[in-house]
Image (cartoon, rainbow, N blue to C red; front, side):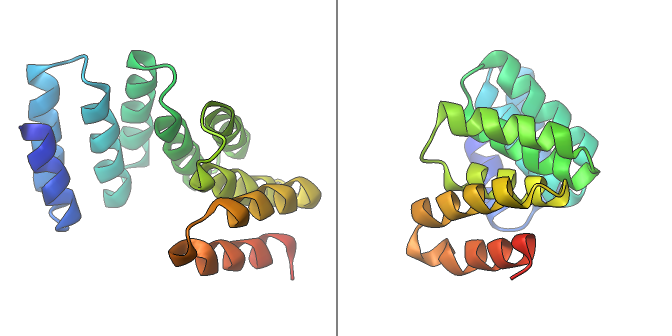
Length: 149
């Protein structure tokens, strides 16, 4: 119940309330990977990158095949400047869930920031192929910026 309420609060922009609810869900069930993942999303949105990485890491420890947790930990690591960690996490996410377009996008952006333009272009083109129509403009903008077009 707390995990669901936390998700609703996060969606409404109440990040502090969301973090509190996810923390309560974790107190009640410390093995609930989804609650750690959700709290990581809320912490990331708050700018608490270290807290987000810690929560995504715990979600992965509880569920080693949690592709979205790898993808979002990669994004948080990229935001921290840990580009090698971002590429590793995003790559693992694409191995676990080849259709997860966000992981391909995150990977491509991190690769571009590392100066690996050809690899970045390939990842971002894959993201563009997989992204729903509503996200294609976002991915295309990231691709153009990353590869300097």
